[in-house]
Image (tube, rainbow, N blue to C red; front, side, top):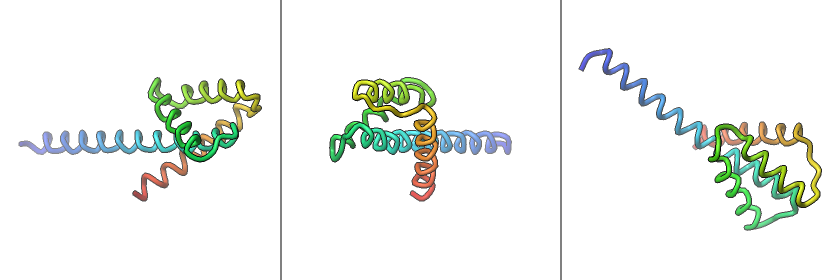
Amino acid sequence: MTTFDDREQAFEKKFAHQEKLDFAVEAKASKIFGLWAAEKLGISGTDADTYAKSLVAANLEEPGFEDIFRKVRKDFAEKGVEVSDHLMNVEMDKAVQEARTLVQNS
């Protein structure tokens, strides 16, 4: 194997590892955000955990968090919970930061 081949394989491994970490951060952030949304909806205990997990699954529909925001906005509207898009973005940013810390420390 040449040095070029070695470098290429190392780059591919690094890229795959980073993708795995990014996926883990996004999944954890979705769950953390889901627990926050569940609290706003008056959901607690195992039902809150189930709701948060449903957001993790909903996040697989498309890249980014817009799919989660759509679901949460709909759920908030059905329950009459008024939360601004700005606050939802702030909470998601907090969730992403917390998830990054959790993934880095695991």
